[in-house]
Image 1: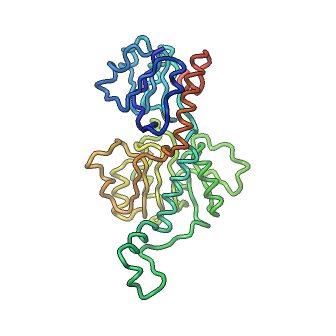
Image 2: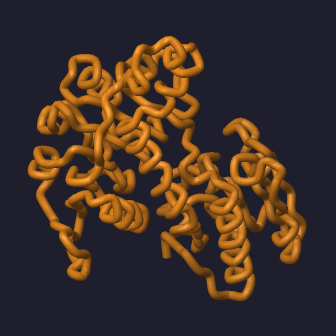
Image 3: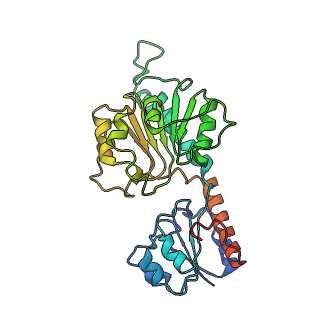
Amino acid sequence: MKIVILDGFAANPGDLSWKGFSRFGEVTCYPRTSQQDLLDRAAGADVLFTNKTVLNRQAIQSLPQLKMIGVLATGYNIVDIEAARERGIPVCNVPAYSTDSVAQLIFAFLLQHANHVYEHTRSVQKGDWASSLDFSYMVAPQTELAGKTIGFVGFGHVAQKTADIAAAFGMRVIANSRTMKGQEDREGFQWVGLDELCAESDYISINCPLTSQTEGLVNRDFLLKMKPSAMLINTSRGPVVVEQDLADALNHGVIAAAAVDVLSAEPPQADNPLLSARNIYFTPHIGWATKEARVRLLQIAEENLEAFVNGCPQNVVNL
């Protein structure tokens, strides 16, 4: 069996091993694959693993030997799952491997905005504390999270884990999702409509998948319904947010701050309006990328391959 990993560097930049995959056949791992190189590198492959390399209908139809597609991520919008379904090719993703890591990043954003640790560190390093007349001073306001409201758009594994942390901080938790069912045992929790979520939340965390219904969901109208003191956090997918609208909202004080781990194009173009917006925090799509999460990612991807080889594919998103 020929197994090709199209873009393995992000998941494994060298601190992990693909050795387990070789139990099932000949493994070729490329750190990155451009769309121009895709068909040459994938030719003759029985199994393809991809993270961000797009497998569209044309590519899938051009690979007659292909029998399985493994996605080295939870989201699978880079694969034309309908084209794969028509050929009987299972597309297997890796669910819930980074739940703890992404929840941790969301709270890193919250805590940075609440306490401005970085700004105070730089101030002290510049000598401001040494020259201060007082034993304590602030370069940015300090905010207590207890009693604040956090609203989740989408309430899957990551949002639920983050809600657990928020509750431990004494925050009120509200959410909106496609189904708005369950969570009866979650103390103090409330399902709300989107308008109510925008109006009541001090922090809004975007945790919904990217679909035709959610693309552009966070737009000018959405942002105008938020509190002027509120913060928006997006760790889901970049296109859920209309970036020009968010930049305008930040620059005109419609909302207080934003934090994003994802953008509509990654890496971003130099003219992305968010790069020059006020009061925004960035991380370069690293919410999933702790070593612990990546160990789980490779382990589950390997288990997906083993299940396929044994005739019982698992984590299939298209069959």
